[in-house]
Amino acid sequence: KFPKPRKIYNDIDRKIVQMNAKAKHTIICAINSNDFNRVSCCVSAKEMWGKLEVTYEGTSQVKEAKISMLVHDYEMFTMNENEDINTMFTKFTKITNALQAL
Image (cartoon, rainbow, N blue to C red; front, side, top):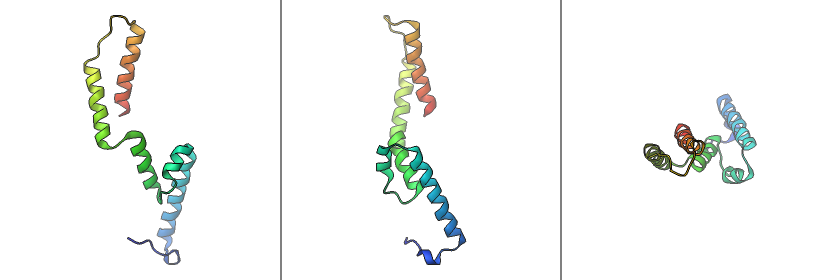
């Protein structure tokens, strides 16, 4: 699909362009320089968001693999002989927090 020439934009088209520009600006203000380099060539805010999402969360297959691994860690969790309660609780909390984040 080819974009319309700007001279034939109607009010709705102009509003969409304006909202996209605001969203892109918001994303750019919130990311670091490495992420900016990843998304600087994107045309739309949706495209930018998609690249950032894959970068930080991975694809749905990666997410499923992470969940599976964390559930396994949760189910197999035991306290080691040489660790204290605080260390054990910290390890357990990391697993449960990671699961909640996904």
